[in-house]
Length: 282
Image (cartoon, rainbow, N blue to C red; front, side, top):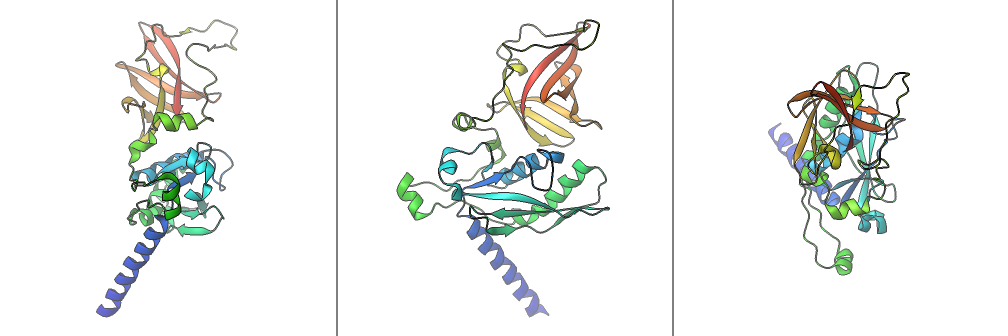
């Protein structure tokens, strides 16, 4: 029995080393904004969650519509991740599958399960459980010899979740992220028959939260919104209503909500309601 246990342990360690070594050939993890299992983008915030966890575990995860230049030129530098959903009536079950540029399956996690009734919490728990397979890998990207000849000697890359707050060079490559409405050019039309009591805040200034692109990082019970410094600008708390968050803004209670694919901050100042559009990237 003892010999069998030792053999099983050696086999598990060897398998983990083999998987890790195989993944070391890939520089990026490509995350879809809409997994095949869902009909809408970032359903139950699954895409945000998967991207965050890969970055947190030493990988460089990028959205499929915001690829860096070297990955655009050579898609084989990355592995495409898909979320396999085998949920039943009473439990949520997920697994993550990594495929190369030829759609060959390279790695599959164990199945994560959750019996939480609320969808967002259930998928968060199931995905975290599936990621136990990823956390056990000692991943470190090692360029192939032909890649080194083309771009010179590259050092192995290790990243943390701070890399989700992208550098300026990465922002230039993300052509898809375009804000049509800016703080200099935005209008608000009321459909009510009476004038709205909500007024836009004045004196926006360089330090105003509305003048910066903010990145949403998951925290307990909500998100923290950080700028490119990175600096935590706001912390928003989830409510029972989807896309509505509570926020403490300048010592005043406020609310952050989504309307017509845009995010807004509403709060009261000197007895007047103020409404500002926020530029949030989840």
